[in-house]
Amino acid sequence: MKLASFDFSLPEHLIAQQPAPERDQSRLMVVHRAEKSVEHRVFHELPEILNPDSFLVVNTTRVFPARLWANRPGKQERIEILLVREEAPDAWVALIRPARKAGLGQRLLLGELAARVIGLQPDGSRILAFTGSPDLRGWIEKTGEPPLPPYIRRASGADLAADRMRYQTVFARQWGSIAAPTAALHFTPRVFGRLAENQIPCREILLHVGYGTFQPVRCEEIEEHRMQAEYFEVTGKEAAAIEELLARGKRLIAVGTTTTRVLEHLARQGGFSPGGTSGYCDLFIYPGFAFRAMQGLITNFHLPRSTLFMLVCAFAGREFMLDCYRQAIEEKYRFFSYGDCMLIL
Image (cartoon, rainbow, N blue to C red):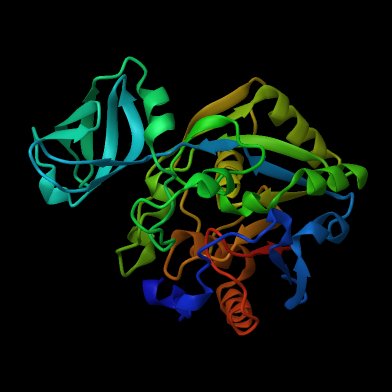
């Protein structure tokens, strides 16, 4: 399929720069695939829209403050470092802008810390070896900035305390993502409480969101694109609970594209292991994909030409999804990470 088939025009003013004042006050477009129909609701109504024949699966990963700022010795400059993944103790794969200032062997200063470029990757990323802190993760947590995507603009030196809180789900636990599982940003304790009252269970998996999730597709034929692998875990307890709910005929509603990829990856590996499982997922979902695990999806509105938009097109149909996005633009829904969301049934 052609990459251009997943393009659409989005007015820039609809790209959300701030989250909704309250998480569960985001707008919710309810999309019915069979009827090809759409409802316009509010997210806090989710427990009433679903019914007890459904259950949710969420991703409990925690975003860490992966954006750092550096300079070369003797230079007054700001070099952006986006940590991607830990390779070894005190060694990280990172994306650096401008990359030309981070050649092999280059020393970078980050306040009381220093890092040296010890490797160049084929995708343009660097391997950095850090020195100067006995607790590098603790230093990153204290010093780093939340890794907001580039379309969310903040002034240099802006106070990012609010973003530290809001670019994180209320149930985030295990440190490791460089981007939020944004479909889950809308959940609140109030919503979870009403889900429980309505006998709609919620189960958990883990996938650490990496660069692969938002890596641009540069192939004109999308089948040639390759996703970067991301680490996932499903405990034995959660695997057993999900299997039991499915055996009872419950509809699995995946919260987010990251959750979707883990569930569909495991469905192709023979299902859930009774003792739990972990590994790396590089599943690329695009139209023509046969879903085996899920019957519904909660997801934000995604960038054109992105693997995330291709996934929702695979689940709901490309033409129908393009029409839903046209309606969302007409109705002035807010797009991308801090924007509104869809429930696709």
